[in-house]
Amino acid sequence: MSDQPELLFIDGEWREANDGRRFAVEDPADGSVLARVADAGEVDAADALEAAVAAQAGWAATAPRERGELLRAAYELIIERTDEFARTISLEMGKPLAEAAGEVAYGAEFFRWFAEEAVRIHGRFMSAPDGKSRLLTLKRPVGPCLFVTPWNFPLAMGSRKVGPALAAGCTVVVKPAEQTPLTMLKLADLLREVGVPAGVVNVVPTSDAAGVVSSLMADDRLRKVSFTGSTDVGKILVRQSADNLQRVSMELGGNAPFVVFEDADVDAAVAGAMIAKMRNMGEACTAANRFVVHADVADRFATALAERMGAMTVGRGQDDGVQVGPLIDSDAVDSVTQLVTDAVHDGAKVVTGGTATGGPGHFYPPTVLTDVPAEAQINKVEVFGPVAPITTFTTEEEAVAAANATEYGLVAYAWTQDLARTMRLQESLQAGMIGINTGLVSNPAAPFGGVKASGFGREGGFEGIEEYVDTVYVALPAG
Image 1 (cartoon, rainbow, N blue to C red):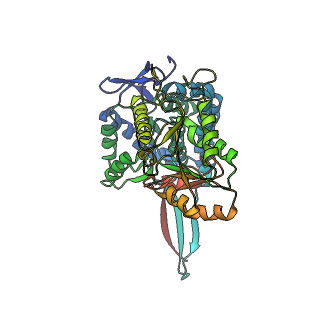
Image 2 (image 1 turned 120 degrees about the horizontal axis):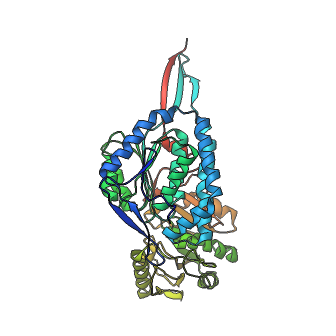
Image 3 (image 1 turned 45 degrees about the vertical axis):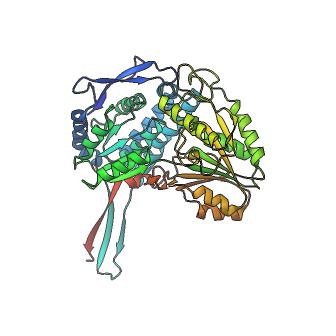
């Protein structure tokens, strides 16, 4: 990967870490080293924030149309370089090239969407109720932001944050996941190329995430933190944000139910399950995690799903015909293996898959389990792998109770042809996003986010840019 940036990107320049350290980025398909990336420390992080602070006033004063045009140019160049970005994503994260190309299209769309939203940040003007004064409100950029992004969607989870921040007039420091920094570095280079000014976007890969992030959050000039990752880490960051009262948005863990009612189109539900479960090898916070299926259609659903999942080709993401790539690392394989083992011990039956493949690489086969007890651990935690555990129900009340029986509330899927039931479900399911008769809810034009332990704040949609602006009220005399 000789054309791939492997340094820190600070104040518009590529540079080594202050202490000269680097860390290895590995290919999850075989464990080989793809690159050795500059390893940021606290000094480098401070330099990145200093650059963002210095650039903030100038970037905020830039005309909204100009900010939007830069984002639009970035969108067009990302699309033009789809193959290049997809290959980088596939190599460092593992997903098949076709799926990586899908991420590129999805990730680029955040720049197009927020290019259009940059010119639509508005306030209001009105008379006070007593008529004696006028009320003016306006929106101002919140200020320098820190983004901590995950490894599973290395482009899209960055663009989903960077796009609205830049549109609103905020400068940013991005700390990408240690496993997948290459895509974000490539994106930073592209933003430099289209003309985003120095200091507006800074990227600091590091093997010391806790130290770097903590040092940045200890600086009161940082005004916003956005994190995508585990609930446990999110709670730590929320506590840390209290010292300087930084604004935070948290897109945290999920445990999505996929509910199939007796009146569902079972074939369509299976097709939707393939999308909701197998996107990104199941390594997605929106992945269907628990399949809650009516007893009348459970056998048919399980058989059809197992046939589809069992026929998928597992292998290196860059190879022709591969549909399922490796998991991110050996810990991921061990975690999935233990969850399946425990479920079987509790009485679950393996319909397909169920055993990790040996040899190099972090592979786990698509797996379907039936007769999974509701209290099994696999129903309580985020699996983050290609495993579909199926439990059954007999009444709508039972199904809703099972769907809501989790601390998480990111997304819920439901399949039914009953309109009245659909209306009830959108009110009774405890999730920030609900997919009715669809296995795909993510859309740059829609607000993405959860409730309960899945976090707060919204990314995407009209709501997404609100995370990056403060509302200011000005009182004016009537005459």
